[in-house]
Image 1: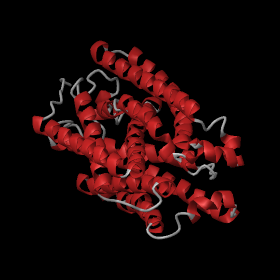
Image 2 (image 1 turned 180 degrees about the horizontal axis):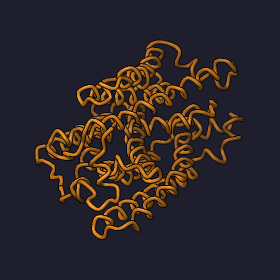
Image 3 (image 1 turned 45 degrees about the horizontal axis):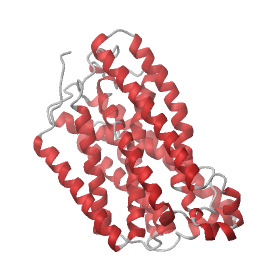
Image 4 (image 1 turned 135 degrees about the vertical axis):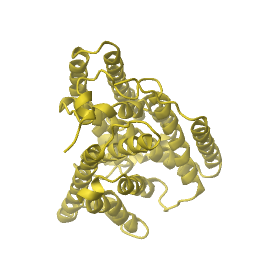
Amino acid sequence: MTEERFVAPKNLKYFTYALITIGVISFAIGFFTDPQRTWANYLLNNFYFVSLAIGAAFFISIQYIAQAGWSAAFKRIPEAMAAYIPFAAVFFLILLIGVHSLYEWSHQETLATDRLIQHKAPFLNTPFLAVRLVIFFSLWILLTKLMRQTSLKEDIEGGLAHFHRSEKLSKIFIFIVAVSFSVFAIDMLMSLEVHWFSTLFAAKTFISAFLHGSAIITLIVILLHRNGHLNMLNRSHLHDFTRYMFMLAIVWGYFTFAQFMLIWYGNIPEETAFYVHRWHSPYQFLFYASIVLNWLIPFLLLMPRKTSRSKLAMIPVIVLLMIGYYIELYYEIWPATVHDAKFGLLEIGTFLGYAGLFSLVVINYLGKANLVPVKHPYLEESMQHHF
């Protein structure tokens, strides 16, 4: 296998710069006109794109641990997506400036009169939140950097030593990220409703990150193939990528249903408050829209063998999944912060800005190494993958 380099077209980079500019302008205008809503957008987009990066890093770790051969040729894509994590770290530290605009537990006057918040105060306080963010992102950055370095050394030296090291790092990473990202989801999202309890929320959020991260990996692979790269991609590879989205959509649906069903059946005020606050238009519509986009459509369209091997069918499903993830986060964040269901140029502009930055990071990192890991021990198996 010869080396293959990805060179991003200048027009593509200019396009990402334009998107970033739109995002910066949108935030600047938003902070002057509606700071509360702008901070909500900031949180939503931060969480959205770091979830894609974490989901991608988890994906590649699973491939190493399972010693999967089919995906070996495509591992540069999740590596490039994981490169966004350091940028997300900076953004989340900046988020601490707006903690009072988002989190009820951060207000001293509320803390003085609310016994439940007082009970949670040793954990839910701004200094300790900052410490947790530093610890989480330091671990994620360190491990993904080590995995990337090991992967690049494998390209130069070959052999099995670097593969086994990557496998060990992956085992460490999945354990750390399973715990830390769960706590991270509670910190960033569930604590917006400080009086709410759900033992399934963290797991559902983690599955969502894995699902949508896998979907974006698949989308990037398809787009690269359409532009003359990754020529080894065949219908069997597409089928396996689809199985990830199909399986994870089912698991996402299970956790979403289980959380709702248990809260509905238990009928405990501290738990039902989350849904009661959202059980009116348009949030009720968003609840159903999230289920349709994140579970029902992938389940129905990706189940048949014919569509699960078709790029033409997969791209619209992935786009709908990404819209579904935005709706899922909007449904969780907006009623707790903005309260009114506002959506307009601010939301569109900020999302485009983050999408531009995420895309720029990915295409830059794709160009920094061989697009195909030429000395991966399972590369031949991946290239000859058929069933």
